[in-house]
Image (cartoon, rainbow, N blue to C red):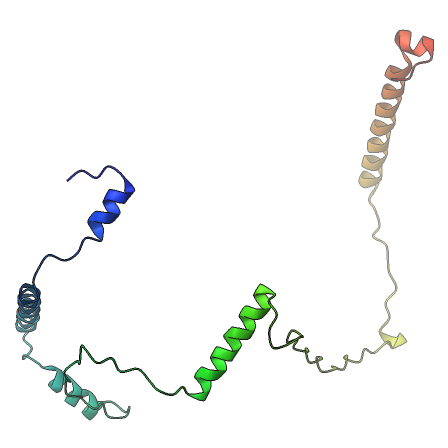
Length: 185
């Protein structure tokens, strides 16, 4: 099937299921049987006995330090009757109030409250600074590093090169016709 555009693709992906409930139940039963067979073959391959959910829960309850796991019997689902709670817990009511207030503040709408909730920051506790001993006994005067004659000669050579560079620049700046006319380039 070639799909030409997004709408066709969306329609194809969201098409209604054409199988009957009996066909869907048969497919689910076949998949469950295949999974059970696959697990059993793997357990047999590793030399392990077949285990059910009840066996796993019994072993966990026996050897784990956690509270015992209670295996609940599967109950039938009531499709027509939906079971909604008739009351809300205090935490649910608090969360609802928080969401309403947050929405009111974000949209800037007129609400029940006139002021925004501003939480004040607690000041950090004052810490004492460590004491520093400024005793004269420990004072050592700064002693400049003595330069060697080679370092002095290198410094003089560097200054000489800089001076020659500056003189060359000045000479080029005032040379030629521009220098004669008094124009500085």
